[in-house]
Image 1 (cartoon, helix red, strand yellow):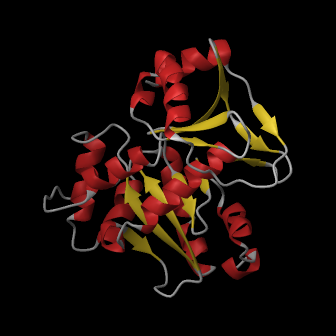
Image 2: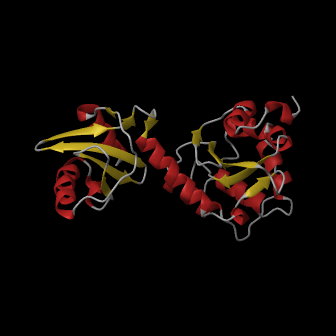
Image 3: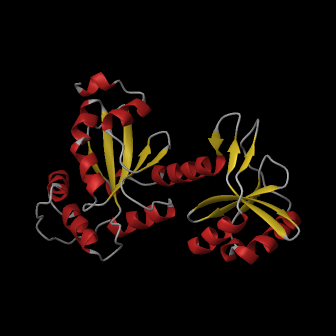
Length: 251
């Protein structure tokens, strides 16, 4: 599917940039949506049962797929396919929709499926999809104490990039089944051996959650306002984005 989308966007894509006064989407009458779907499915087979909604721009429709949101203008035998940008608010509506979907998925995930560092009554928090063997995940983990000192709680969700059954997956299961999960995860990220263990665990479940959220790499950081940040971000930048003074981290 992703190859199909890349092929499609390389040949007919455009960036749909418009000035908008609103960003909501509304259901389009069924017959019009069916016409749009019939054209889209010729290039993007998953569009056959994907949600397609009208946007604030006449003639432009939003297509929701597992890996993101796409915008299309369909006119006879031609399709313009790309991003939709609100120039007034400087917002990429596809990325905004994806962030909202990810935030909803995270909000519905109980904390007992996470390994948590920091104060229970933290004023702010970040949720991180992490892989034990990921270099930048390890770099971020070294800065977790500074985030905690600033009053930011860090919530980890397992996302072994190599997939379920991989060595990284097995390592995370051993961490999860350890009596001291926080210490075990810190040790594992430092390259230390964690005693092999098995138990009921959410690792496969949170990996699938990450896939549904469009996570393609680690770390993927979700701020508590729903903002999604793919990749490593230094702790002081995270604090700035959270509106927390860097001095509070002891700097």
